[in-house]
Length: 163
Image: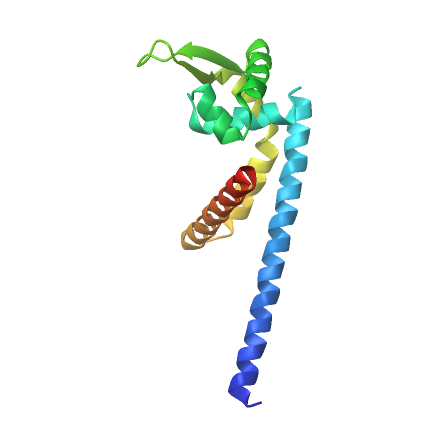
């Protein structure tokens, strides 16, 4: 084997190792964030799925119940019980859509949302400290990568839910 071929083989091995390490780091991150979310759910006296729905409502709301069910990957009947719990506990409000009075929109209530921000404040502070060590260009690179991974996860989830 000549040195060019040997170099190419070694480079391919290093890339496979680096890719495997990246995938392992993402799995570890996913697991750690799941643990954090469980602790936040417990402190806020929410079920994990309730917290997931609040996240979707916070990011995409006001949102219709059917859009929320799609985004959260839940059956509409299951979502009704979740929304009832969240409304009783003062996390959300159901309001008539001003564009279509027959439709309902779900919105997060700011008073209770502040509680969640407080519970995530330790992680947010840590993220700020981590991000301070990166250049703006590096942050854009990492953000782009994470958005692509999130999109791939959405596609994989959709494929599994359809078949």
